[in-house]
Amino acid sequence: MPTLIDQLKAIVGAGGWKTDPTELQPHLTEWRGLVFGATPILVAPKSSKEVSEVVRACAAAGVAIVPQGGNTGLCAGAVPDESGEQVLLSMARMNRIRDLDASNYSMEVEAGCVLADIQRAASAADRYFPLSLGAEGSCQIGGNLATNAGGVNVIRYGTARALVLGLEVVLADGTVLDGLRSLRKDTAGYDLKQLFVGSEGTLGIMTAATLRLFPDPGETATALLALDGSVDAVLLLAKLRASLADRIEAFELVAKRIFDLVEAHIPGAKLPFDEAYPWYVLIETATGGDPELLENALSNAADESLILDAVIAKNATEADNLWRLRHSIAEAERHAGVGLKHDISVPIGRMQEFLIRGEARLAQLMPEAKLLVFGHVGDGNLHYNVALPRTMTPDALQAAGSRITEAIYDLVAEMGGSFSAEHGVGRSKRSYLEKYRGGPEIDLMRRLKKALDPQNILNPGKVI
Image (cartoon, rainbow, N blue to C red; front, side, top):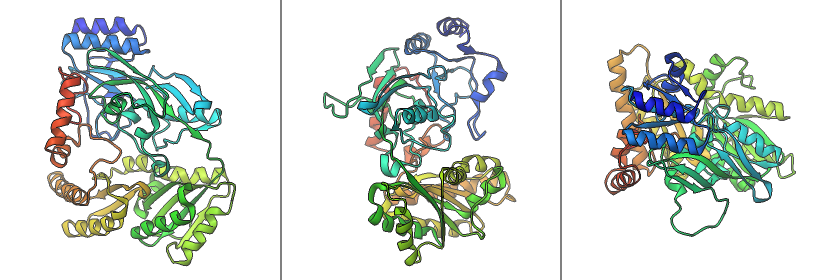
């Protein structure tokens, strides 16, 4: 290891490595502070060539590498294990936007680019990159692609997988796979880039990507709606889709208890209603030049008693304030120490059934537990979190948590859904992948891993 560390320092040069424990600490702690790791060195290459050389050196030494982006993941997929024998590879210095082709609606970016910087660069060229999530000010596009991130605009634009046209990837032997094409149509062989999107750095290290851009959606309308029940959100979405079609950019369901946490822990956060309601929906639509489009659609829904109250943003500042409430949820939950987190998805047509059956199942297992639900109803993804009584002992909490999580995941599987919708598998959900995706599916994943990473040096212990 000492010889390897010297080699790595020489490859990345001054300013490209860290070994001081204090400087390393933020990189060794999972975002929620639940998982901790160790490493002898963090290296931060500034080019794909340097990444290749780092991988070759580690492969020759038989030492594992853990790629890390903004370290905002929630499944411990970017943190090394506790052995102190894995090299941490940060993409932070690979943060250039290499090219933006407005006429082709594409841009080429390095994996360490912060998502918000990509959004701004697209906007400056009168284009739109739709991936948007609460951590966009610090998460990196490499991590977004590695976990196939979703965010709030999936209903119209799809997940990260749908937004990538090409990839540059460093393989486990140091080979650089240059697939940075910007084509919409290409049937020349296997679509190799999709092997790496969602693989969480276990099959290769993404160093750059060609991204799909879209026309600027123009004027949008944003509203926060108050609802009586979560099931009403499913009915409301169906109603609004009939009148708004694909103009719906986002449709977010949030329980009152969640916004209570936001108001309690985020300075300046306040709901714009005089009274509290059980459930809320945050909706954003493209207006298509009709400023009353959303208001008229909501009026029709209100006539059917699907909406109890509504606030429509009058300007961009008010819209930003509404979205700040939504994007602050993860931070508020971290401050509150919320218990069980479940990032699940079910077919949209069965969302209503899941909400009813899930609540009934939780009430049966532990009546005193509280549901803390929010998510992207429009794409079938819910963050179905559960707060357990604080009076329980640690052992009782762990036992109850395991029972509740398995009961929820069993229901999700029964309904044809997934226990991991957009956060990935990482380290914390690996056992559930084995349980719910067993047989030929897991076998094929293992064969792919062995073929592409025979030494098992790329993010070992994650996913499978």
